[in-house]
Image (cartoon, rainbow, N blue to C red; front, side, top):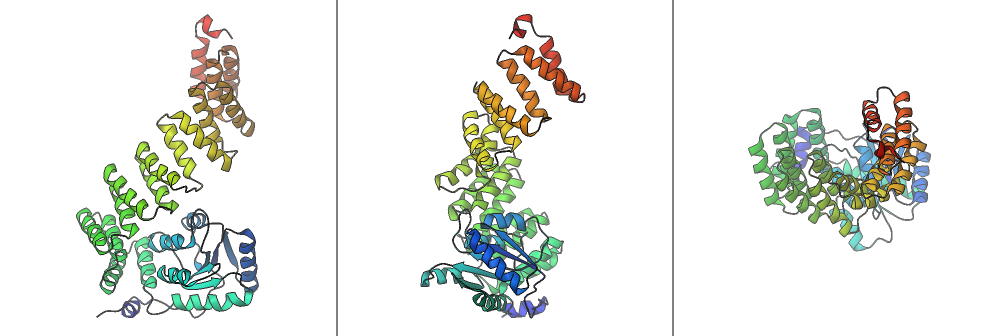
Length: 409
């Protein structure tokens, strides 16, 4: 019977002897002081690049947009937004993300926490508080646990790298080997399904997803990837069902909501996206993009009162976001809160004096308030300064041609 070490040998997986200090170290810790202490220790040990994040979701967003090679990750167990175990599972399952050795930091460890760390596949455990002397042996231990000839994670990483580079043949061979070695694991079958989708073999992908579900009905990414697949086919009902199942299995992972919302937004299925995002609110989950997505969804379906609520929440995080401020102005105008809408537009214009949307919308608002001369005056200034702003020129002509009674202030 083929074993992990046989596959690792077959695909010539390399085993570095020492931790590469020129690669990037990732620190994920919500306590700023603790982050700074760890980064300071690592700097003293000679590590050149240390990236710091306050929660797992923040780190994932960076990983998706970097080509940096990861030396290892030190991640806190309990954090707001996204905890350490959810982060690790996401990085392991996502075909686009890379990882290295992973060490978890734990307060007040007990048998249950240690067992949970083991079950989640961490490579090392650091007990808080720790010193520079504690870090060195723990990182070496995590490095050795990860880089060993019996670790299937090395094969999963090799498969993901092959998949990303377009070598689907190699990726497929590795996943098939893993599926034989780990006969109850759904993860390699989902990998094969993703390859089938890339090769446009839809019926094969469907069968593989069914097989993955049969192997492990609780493996979240079966439903994530199948939901993504259905969304790409425009089958919204099936996609939403898959996303709901993924959320039920992992209700406190913000990535579940973000990915579903983004895909449904692309399909312009705003009510369905709102439905899923509201589950996060019920679960009292809060993450940076939640109110952004909800504000955009409600704005698109013209439920302006709810849009205003979530736009204001989004502005609490980004008070100078002119897109939010413009949408706030439009929403307030639509429910006849003209004075508040005017304040929103003026806030945009103060930040960006030439913001076309704010200037145009302010002119429309002034007309709605009965201040036609002021609206015309504003549009005349805009058109003079921006002669290519055709929409403003057309609106100016419309206002000038209005009946005399409409022009009265």
